[in-house]
Image (cartoon, rainbow, N blue to C red; front, top):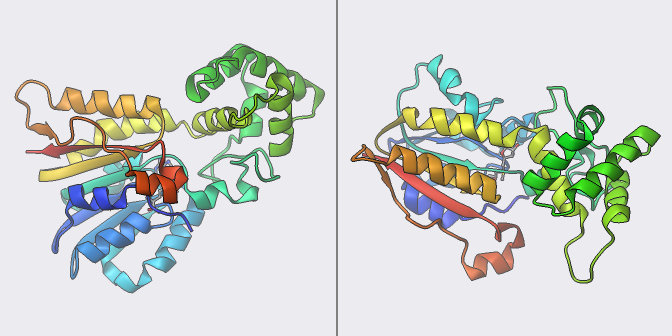
Length: 292
Ligand SMILES: C[S@@+](CC[C@H](N)C(=O)[O-])C[C@H]1O[C@@H](n2cnc3c(N)ncnc32)[C@H](O)[C@@H]1O
């Protein structure tokens, strides 16, 4: 089961209370959602979103005991404005986004997110839309692929990787996660003690397949308008590009005597204890803004 990251900090800043209405824009396994519902006992409401239908299905089951206090949609947080608009639900006391993917998704071979498991080259969060990683690898040019790997994967040898991958596509030998890991390995080799060279390429492709930065941009533009006074938006990110986007968007909101206040000047990081017990949390950064 996915272990929630920075949960204590999320609860501290969101400060859920009875009677409040909260949104978890990326439910995952429902760890934050359940903790928010507990903290907002007996009548606080949690509205949940996820673009992964499997996640929605599991969280619905997990949170069944909360009855009407939990409502959820198989939709993106970047679509929350239109989704909630049509329900008549008013303004929110708090919103949290926990970006990226859950351990449940990462460890499911069928989803193709990890080179540690043999599976199809899928990597879609939302399996009801077209465009798997295999499709992406076929459809982008070598130059586009190089940019994806270099920007989203921060891989310094992106050009070489892109050349090898496009060659493998042409030869018809790039169908599975194992093929992908093997091709990257052959392109780059492995330096002792370093992370597997495929790690960065898998991350880059996942970000591109799901348009994660495009969705974050839409979310940053739309979500603040859903907050009521004293409402807070907490965003936990795992990639430097995402953190930069959040930082700039919050800075823009809070500039010139605006009605917004950035609550933590420096992003919050997991404690050394959390990093030790949950290594997945290592790259996490949380930023928070409040509508005054
Ligand atoms: C890191 S997990 C969240 C874990 C969650 N905080 C918990 O405690 O279990 C991220 C989730 O966000 C979902 N996701 C990714 N992009 C999304 C988007 N644009 N809108 C909604 N959900 C999204 C993924 O499918 C995944 O389930």
